[in-house]
Image 1 (cartoon, rainbow, N blue to C red):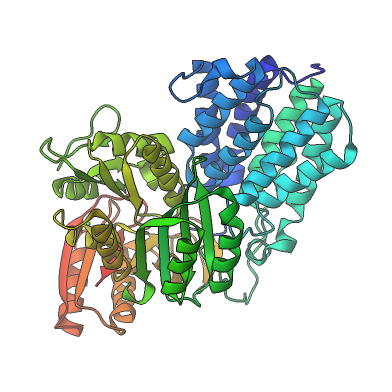
Image 2: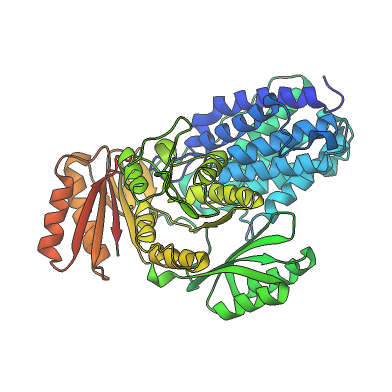
Length: 557
């Protein structure tokens, strides 16, 4: 039983933690509140921690991790944290990387950590995770991390085993309370998935410290469906719908200016995120009504650049190389576009438009390193990244931050669907200033309403009522608006027609359809005939995308 945390103990934690996450992967995946299969939290955490462990095994990286300046413990923790950052998948993976980064930063000059040093590191890690989110939500992995750190602090012991055991136990207790803090979890009858993953890792660390095998009980199973359920409305993760504009800019400013700026922008709107690179450069994002005031606040704080404004109301062939990145013809130069996709047809469509394509796998869920590799593969000095999924945006932003440190100008246009990426590419103009081109692409993406059809993987409650496995779900902007009883083969066409009628009732001139792998023969033509008959002035274009989880993607411009 180690009395101190040293490099050998960290490596044992890597092995135990990864094995435990893999054992609990399916359980954590099943904690999703939505019935649609996607890049689930358990899978994301396994892939992120596996990348972190691989970085530890690979030895030091002198280009990005100057181990010579660190103690042996600091070096192995730095590699662990950097591996997690580059391998991060989904928001849960990015937060895990933040937590590991906080531990690594606190223990960088420590040769061996006892209980007191680890306690301080856990508090630093929790604070770093909270600081990365402008509007932290309780009942999430953030709450679980803070509970673990606070319990260790209250214990006040230098015994490593005691600190690890108390932290793991308190994290599990905090996890059990998450449904009381987050209504979406209570309605679905589950605990927070990211928090569950953190409990698994802390329990593995306690097992290493005590020399025992972690034995965590399973998280609560989803509650059974009620006879007459209330509509399920998921909390919006990116702020309220009370504000009309998204403002984003880079800001060169001293650390001291950021506190007043956060206060000023927080009073103007919501969805505030301020992320720095450690060298006085910050990425500022906020939703507001007063665009001028948001920009003026940046001018008072420092020197803003690459200012982008999106009005919410204004809101698609190359072969993959060995590294999984499909590259455009070698002729393109100064500017590049990176697009995350799922499905061979969509990949060919974007590659034909000159984009560098990242195959995100069956859930469009790539790692930070994969997106960074694609940015580099463009060979361009200025690159736009189109993530095409809300779950990929944090990873895209992390990759963009890494690329900026290498001197590449990178902008992430937060597209949530390939439909928005199609619209963005349609207005791209290399003769415009890069900043102006990014704004035009963002405006075109925002003006495109996107929707999709999916087949429910299990019984669940949705915002449109109860669904059963095999039913067809129609989602607009990620929200279930229609449930059509299965079987899917017969329900898809009717659901698509009703979905488009709803979307076109508020206007539209062009409908884009992308057919998935599971789309029945004739679905595209059936939908086209319906639109021609019901909405004769609306143009329809359709493509085969081959995406696995959505038989049909829809865009309305």
